[in-house]
Image (cartoon, rainbow, N blue to C red; front, side):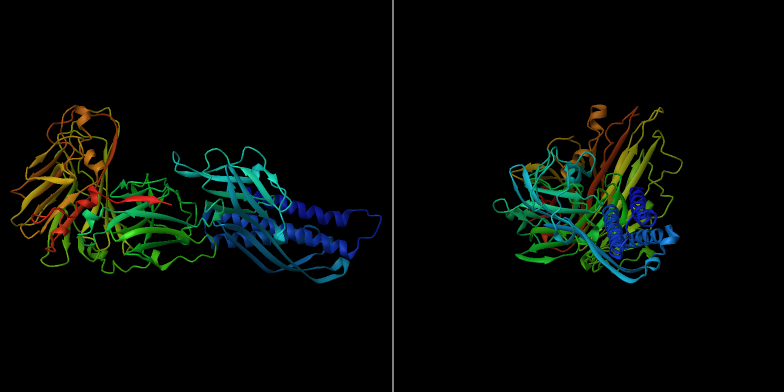
Amino acid sequence: MAAFLVLVIMISAIIAAFNRIQDNPFKEPVTLSDSLKTVSNSLHKLLGFSVGYYGSIIKLTGNVTYAKEKTSSYLQSGLETVAHEDINSGVSLSLQQMLVSTNWFGKQGFTKGSLIVNYSIPTLGIYGVKYSGSASLTVNIQQTVGSTCYVQVLGDNDEPNLSLTKNDLNFLKYDSSKGTWIYINPTYDPIISNSGIYSITLPSGINPDAYYLQVTDARGIVSSSGYVRGIGNNNKDLTSYTYTFTWDPTLYNTLNEPNMEIELLQNGTLRWLGQSLPLSGTARPIAPIPVKGFHLNQTINGINEEVPFQIEDWGSNYRVPYGMTSNSTIFDDNCMIVFLINHHVSKVTLWWDGSDTAVQTKYAYNNIYFTNDNTGNNLLDNGKITLDLSNFANGVKSTTKSTPSVSSWINFARVNNIVPTYGSAVSYTITHGVVRDVVQQEPEWSGGVPNSPDLYGHIVITLPANSNYYTYRVRNIFVPTSITRNLADLSVLQLKAPTGSYTQLTEDGQNSGIPITSTNALFSDGMTAHQHQWSEYIDASNLGVGIFMRSNFNDLIYAFDNVIGQHTGTISLNPSQKTLEVDPVNRFAVNGFSQSLDATWVGGVVNFNSGNPVDSIYPSSSGHLGLWVLVEYPPTVAPS
């Protein structure tokens, strides 16, 4: 609508210019130079508005193809309206070329366009005149001193633009409460030098060490520039974020190369198994940049190289996966960047090309790990394990690809001893992924759950590349109800190990940072020091299956303890049946539970059979190190 109003105003201004030529009872003859100048001015205004229109579409959608199509139509409408508004003028206009481009969020941001039009005015004997013009807006943040930033703004032909007010200047601030970027004007009008340098007092809440500035001129042309403080007060090129990872060498140096599946969110949070990694420093929210411009590098054993990643769309506060993000999408609070790391990675750099001509890197879409996915047979294959999703009701089966093979079976979302029936097929949200596959399923309890009305469920499984585990996210949504709800049993998952001679081991607290292991069959300690972040069945050769989770989701096992004032949540094992359960309601019933609860339990299911103790969750002998360190001692991240 805003763009349409601009078009109406633009066309009205151009028509008015031509009407003055035709209707003015001028006392002196209109010279040919006056007519040529009027047409050129009108075309230049049309060009400026068109460049502004193009930038407004890029800002909102990131879709260059769509923006160019709409801008071309926009421009043609303006030309045709001018040419046909006054029959007496007899103006004919022929568009020869229109070029537009943007480059934003870097050290020097610009939006520019050029136009070539041939025109004739037969009533004045003017034929075959060529108009060639350009329109641009360039923004360069030069330095920041204290709370004052100095910005050079140039217009057409790199001439200083001296006409901007505080209302034309917008600083970008990330609003964490809303999960979006907002625009803030300065409190005071800037001081402007003749060279186009604007001295602007930064608005409250803008970090003087790193920020983005958007400038809009009177034609609607918009451009954005980024600043990060370098040595002294000089501007560096804000087109990348670097994350430095610090690992505990004592714990990690003897491990092989277990991958961690990292999710980078718009607010700058890096998550592993659903919980934020420890952060040293301030998170850097990701700017609203078209997805196609992103790249990811990692420093691995001292060598910096570009690596695979994928960008996904999620809804409901990152709880419902939608699929891979279109490369023309603007990165927002529905997007996450997913990549894999291990303890050989010391740095991860997210960088971007802010140009509208950026081409998406092959590392964001090329499938090299999931070439054996077969959704027709309900099989996913990440190179180390396969997932059989053919019968959710009988359990998701995961099997190692190396011999001897090890399998485990998982059932999800049992309520009051009723196992879901799953009336619909699995939704293969992302398959043949770059770094992971994603599937989801809706548990349905045939005939409803006895004594538990108004309950909904959702299950998400991710399969990261080259890993001997997959992740689960089991969500239960209890909506408020006036009907009595009694929970005698609520089980997030039930794991079944293959036949064999196993020892059951579960973490039961720590001693000097090393897990204390227990062979007990029931653990119910409530939210006290994250006692049980992993549990496994393991044989003498370090072959077995198990689960692990981060501390927040260990705590969430006891979500109902406070409701009834007793420890009802448990991790439960049945050694004779070789089963392991995560049960938020077990030891005591939760009766009269009518309020709302929306809880998601997140963790990983691991199969291990390499024979190397460190590839198990916790080895059966010879040392203490294993995959448990991934959830107990993840790396610390320092953003810069």
